[in-house]
Length: 139
Image (cartoon, rainbow, N blue to C red; front, side, top):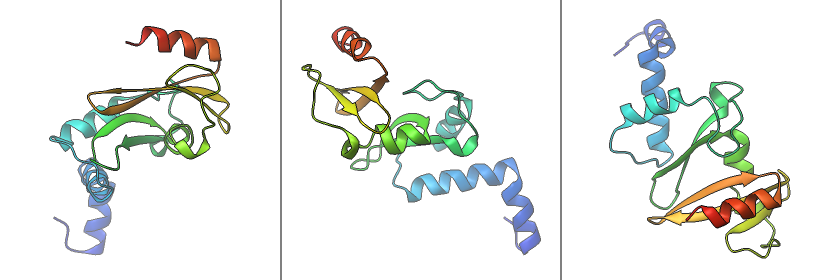
């Protein structure tokens, strides 16, 4: 472990220091995982958002979405999906007439939501028809 300011600066810039910092922040945010090393490597390996499938702009764009009640990880997604699309506050009531589909005004996307073993899952679509088709076939 570094002792001087210069040693700390060098350590924090190293791959080991970056990993340690990221895992520490995840724990502070309430993320719970049985193997943080494995989670870290998995997150680094993801190149596209699991929700909108867009390529990450940079390393800060890659977010770990988690359930704030129990700390479990749901997705590795882009900042926009993590803060906008997944925010229930931005959604309108279900206007599609189909259970599990809502419309997000800010992102102009239809959001399909479902649960598997108590974990919420999301998938976003530009087209309402695509969301309806996905919703029918997801089970």
